[in-house]
Image 1 (cartoon, rainbow, N blue to C red):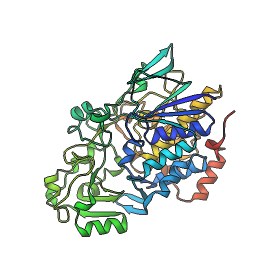
Image 2 (spheres, rainbow, N blue to C red):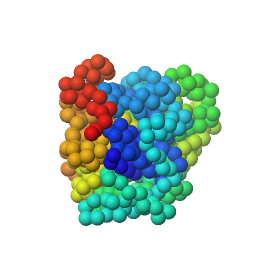
Image 3 (cartoon, rainbow, N blue to C red):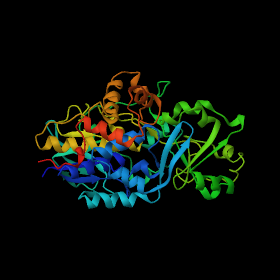
Image 4 (spheres, rainbow, N blue to C red):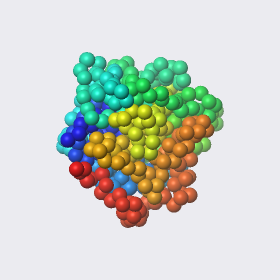
Length: 426
């Protein structure tokens, strides 16, 4: 039985560990903090726009456990808000322990508060990863899901300062890239003006600090859209967002809130003194990040060169998922890339050929398209998601966007991928 070590316990790392275990490997998931899910602890949005299609494809491919869990933890379903249809919103306060239980039930060993600081190499292979306490964890193949944020110096240099966000670098220390430690040169995404990185797309408000009217609307509809006075409309803030699917004029002209447990404010930052001038927000307080009034985390600073199987170029036994695999935005995007990376790690360890997911599917086309686009300087300035921007337009143009579950299942079947991730490899 091969041993697959996944580093980084966000949604992509959970997807990779899950896929490795289902394929018959010994899966170990290593996370530097005391909780899994990373930014998924403050995210909560899924099934909006083309993410519905991608989730149903993953389910049809046999890798749907995490999406089914999200569905079971949804506070609201079929929510429409500016630029987005049929979204579901999972409860960010309650989902993480359930994910950990799911992985444990599948036989994944989860190591929390285990920060990786280095790797031990032999030629072009990783032999083991080295933890901060000097422990060496050996494995056959490795998956880097360490992400591209979680370094306060980047937030200070390229953003508005450390946002004291859910990544909690000051408590658990900054992330360390396995890819970089293995000697592979990573690349950074750029904003439209050419500066590096992009700012995370939302902040959290305490629901209890909102007016009864706004809170009631959130509880009943899952969303609340409040027009801003003209003096507070700042279109230029949209250019800084990593989440291009929310970089629409409506998000500059209104306060858009979603109920994911806290009130999710769909803005990268919003000065508290200005927010409190809006009716219904007179007593508003940020919940997480507490510094959301002036900044948010900077992402896309450390991505790995890889092929369409998600194998990292130049290292024989390293794969990658989530943002480490490219400027992907969202939980759905993280999970589906993690699934493929974890599965292919097992295939390679068993001497089998890696697979590229067919471009007849949205997932396969997404991975192939992003990889191709980011080989260009212009493509490195874009961000890619099933739910908006450049890639969602491509989905619609190619006829890959669908909310018809039977149609999606048939597409997966034609690609020969039905229950693909459910099959234990020899």
